[in-house]
Image: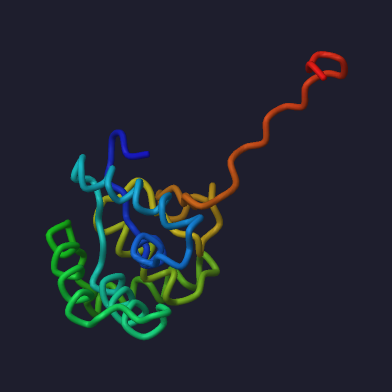
Length: 156
C-alpha cells in the first residue's frame, strides 16, 4: 500500500483498529497500521487524533478507558502530525466548495496534501478518486471480483 510515499490515515481507520466489536474491519485496519508503523510512512493530523480520542472514549461499546485513549494518542503522535491552523481551515473551506466535500472531509484532504501524502486511507471518501493530487483508498472496500469461469471448466 505504501511504496514510494506517505499515507494519510483518517480517524475511522484508527478507530477500527482499536474497536474489537468490528471483527471484519479490525484486522484490516491493524494490518494497514502495522505496515505504516514498519515503514514509517503514516501521517495523521491533530483533527484525526482528536476524533479518535472522542469516539473511542464515548462511542465504543464499552468505551475505551480515557487513560488508554490518551496513551494511544501519544503513540500515534510520534508519527508525522499535521497541525490544524487558521490557514489550513481557510484552504479546506475553499476545497470544500471546489471538490464538493463536507468541510471535515476537506480538512482531512488538506492535511494530507500539506503532509505530502500520496494516499489517503478512509472509508468516508470515494475510493479511486483523486483530490488535490491525493489518491483516495478505502482499505475496507470489497476485493475485486474474480472473472467467472467458463461453463464446464470447474470440477463438480
